[in-house]
Image (cartoon, rainbow, N blue to C red; front, side, top):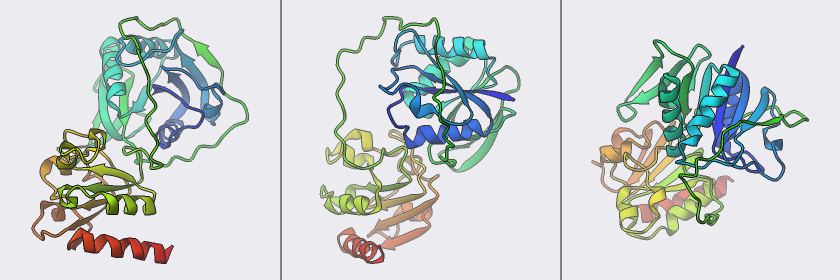
Length: 312
């Protein structure tokens, strides 16, 4: 049976959608062991009481990015278990840690995969989402890959007993010191990179986010933005979608007042369904949309919100 290692930087008292999705993908390939590089929650490994997970590994102390000891922990775990696959979420910190681990293990790393097979082949989109490719290691083992969110089912069969937690002889290097932590205020909306529905605002909103926020809340969607919006200070830079921001692949992406330049397309055009609202009928975003509405967002969005409420 394929031996799969899943790498999480932290686990809270409830798994995130992206974590559940990654575990579901891994258990479909073989038996899983989860590496938690940070702290476990107060209820220990209970969130990981999932069929197919045979154990949880941690270091002797919590290890936080960008500590090089993260790669050492992954390398040690891979050696202990003779892992065939090492998977992690497609986040900057995890990509950095797994790249170091790949170099130490003399193997390959595939980032941004949409799927991995038990034989070590990974599918992914390239060239800003315009092509789909399959990549496989020509030699070396294990295959290391990071997976995008919203690419597979997140159904997880739970079991009664939490997996055993084993500490590996790896500690934080001391090169990274956490001086202070601040909890990000909750908006009540899902995380942008994990959301199944995303509403994105562009320069066309002219600083007024009330309608796009109302639409996002009606749909239970995450709120994103173009670079022009974040540069203007209308939204935080963490909401930026595009080549120099985050990449999203939701089931539904609604673009509001965004022209759709190539840099922005690179961050969202792998979405399953794309709806664009723009008053410029020649806006580049219409080239990749499934549904396009040419009109003033201040007229279109109130009608859309009203219709959603009626149907609900």
